[in-house]
Length: 344
Length: 96
Image (cartoon, chains in turn purple, orange):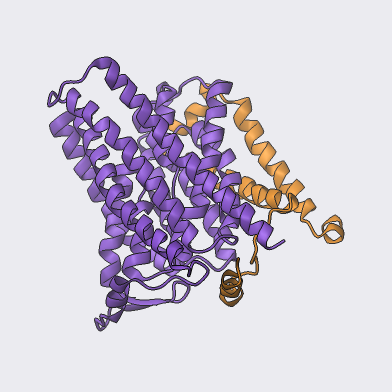
């Protein structure tokens, strides 16, 4: 690709990358993923080509995930073995998902691809986010918010299935399951990562509700998966010359401050807070993407919208994505401050 | 010495901070210099490895620096003992 992909950077664009990078890092250190859904469109709004924005984002993601994983491993929260099992099939999911994306783009063009991504956001995040939020609210209302999380009925069933030769024990997550259940979960995580850039929105709830891992371990283990997928993705994009190292390292500059703080935050909050933050972000992002679906349908000729309304919907949609990250960050910092005060 | 007397990792904070300043000093010095940054978008030979190696180098220094930054600021984890689940579980259970 060469130097033609490089845009001129000024202090405003650097400032934007630093602010979003810090908040994205904070959320990522806390729930295992986040930030990508704002960073990629944010970079594109600065004039960065779409593919370069995706590539540069993924190049900042793997070192950030590595630093976060190392930090949370010190707190005994990371199940490296589970992360590696998940990563193995996540790679397949990413590869297959990228193929689906290319086919849709070839058949329906850029707008069709955008519509597919937005619909994936809306459907997956509404269902999974709604489920996680319902569970978090149930724990809050039950008066057992201080206790360790209960294993879901689905996870109890999965753990009860003994398939000889396939059983694996994950000590940190405190689960023993057949790896045959991990394969589709890892695959779905990779598939979602290649579609909406945040595989953790399936990976983390999947590890919690399907495998029975505690939320704190699931969110920490997601960082291992994010590292593996991010490293592979960076190599793939670097082979095409799409990585703008300046954008990646500028985001990293602030996001490492955030990821460290988010990781520290997990030791101060009650276990269900991770679910609250994750579900809140997922549901707001789902609304954000739902707002642009009519825009893409109009661009495909399936609907009619006023051009001014289309511009407005796109702007409001982006504002909602920024809001999702900001609300997540506020909940995290608020919970940390309360936890810190409670422990003097 | 300074680290021992205050209980905070000042020395490591400064050393890794210097490493981080060198990395980012180089980046900002070449921010819009296409003749330098252009190397990172080359697809021939070993050049595609350059962004990956750079990300590792930056994260080694800056990752450690940001960790020590929060330490010296007094923002530390509640249960920071390495891989001690029992301590973590007890701490979670006693939370209010």
